[in-house]
Amino acid sequence: MNENSSQEAKRRAVENLRSGRSLDTQALLLNIQQGSRSALAQGITLIETGHSEWLADLPRSSSKSIRLGISGVPGAGKSTLIEALGMLLIEQGHRVAVLAIDPSSPVSKGSILGDKTRMERLSMHDMAFVRPSASSNALGGVTKSTREAMHLCEFAGYDVIIIETVGVGQSEIAVRAMCDYFLLLLLAGAGDQLQGIKRGIMEICDGIAITKSDGDNALHAQKAVGEFASAMHLFPTRDHGLTPAVLAVSALHHHGIEALWSDVQRVFRYLDERGFIDQLRKNQYLSWLHEMLREETILQFYSRNAEAIAQAESSIAQGLSSPYAEALKILQQKK
Ligand SMILES: Nc1nc2c(ncn2[C@@H]2O[C@H](COP(=O)(O)OP(=O)(O)O)[C@@H](O)[C@H]2O)c(=O)[nH]1
Ligand SMILES: [Mg+2]
Image 1 (cartoon, helix red, strand yellow):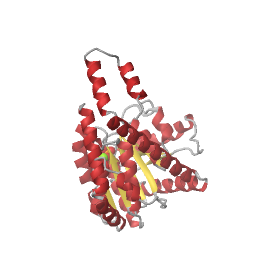
Image 2 (spheres, helix red, strand yellow):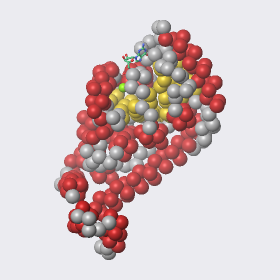
Image 3 (tube, rainbow, N blue to C red):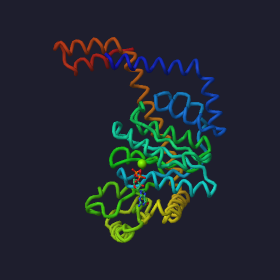
Image 4 (spheres, rainbow, N blue to C red):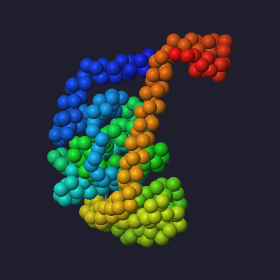
């Protein structure tokens, strides 16, 4: 019953937003388009708190930004690399947006603050937008809010979108589906190199960067590059036929960052020329449609049948009826 009333509250909030505040969101969209970073941040906050209906006014994106996903365990050097790469891209005239996904909420609070300081130069820069999102707060899931935030960033004129994600699992797969290039960061000398890596993640990445290739670690990193490069041939080739590049980088010493970006561009160009990028964008729009339909259908169903569901809950709790019988009864009601 609690569930129903909170869903009802969300519905009401959404209704308010639709009717009363539609003018505000028009203005918000205009400000975002004109490059206001605070408007963009506000827009993403709305999305993350479950208010994304106003995105109906967002024109379909015609921009072909480069979407780069970066994954690796905490401490692998993601944020430091993104800062270095982001600054390089800005020098080249790009506008860079960084969205971070961290599904582990209590732990992430600290690391999110850490990220903010680690991307200090980038987040201060006029040509960059850094959002260390606490997406655990996001209603409707990490994927949905990140995808919507990404589109909003593109609407705001950012032409490189970097999505930082932690760990291996569901969020990796989701981010992979959203990105044109998926980069896996690995630390040399962090235990059993090949054995420790999940096959799955190797099969979905477009490139591997061995991080912190500097000082005493440089030799280890070079060795790891050789090992991984030959190991890549043990994996089936990606459906587009490219073998992932393996590179050594040092974000601290700005080593290998240009080479990394060249590889991203190489892969993007290859995919674009063969129509893969357009296909990817189309598929994303389709899954966006279906996710929204699913979500809205569930909300509507629960709201329409609130009374019957409450009755069913009570008779199941009292042992008078089975969930199966009650569910059938509700589903068969004509409304
Ligand atoms: N020596 C060295 N240390 C690095 C490099 N990149 C990151 N680090 C350090 O590794 C730690 C974790 O980096 P961070 O970027 O926060 O990793 P994240 O958790 O993957 O985002 C920090 O103390 C960084 O200073 C690098 O290229 N060389
Ligand atoms: Mg980080």
